[in-house]
Image: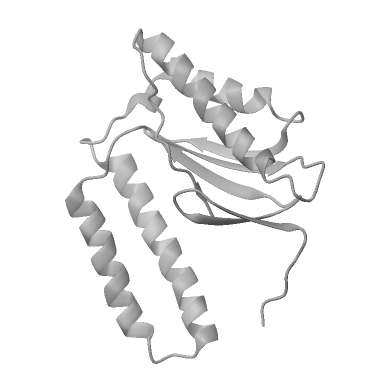
Length: 174
């Protein structure tokens, strides 16, 4: 039986999300580009093979194994995105990285408490705790990510003297 927690906010964009009010959240966003089909297929095949491997285990043990598998897959993808020269490496530019750093610090102690961040060559990791005033304020996290991604995309476009958003639309919260 699932117990409803009034401090947990559930919402769905492309993926279902659950955010617990006044708890830290890990956010990753990447530059706008489509992951190659062969990479998406490899991730799917890994997941399917893994699920077959654990199907006879108890539910608790399956969940523990899924968590470990998810960490390994995340690390694998993170390494690939960082090392593969076929992916854009725009965030390596010092002016772009500095602009993102300034954007992250600008909202610190206003919209969230910024704990840590890492600006990779083509994606950004952020650990923060959003400030929520009401228990049903799901928009706090979504407003923060929208604001950060919109602002940084606009500023990158200005630096590159280009138009259009360069940020990738989906965010992952882990």
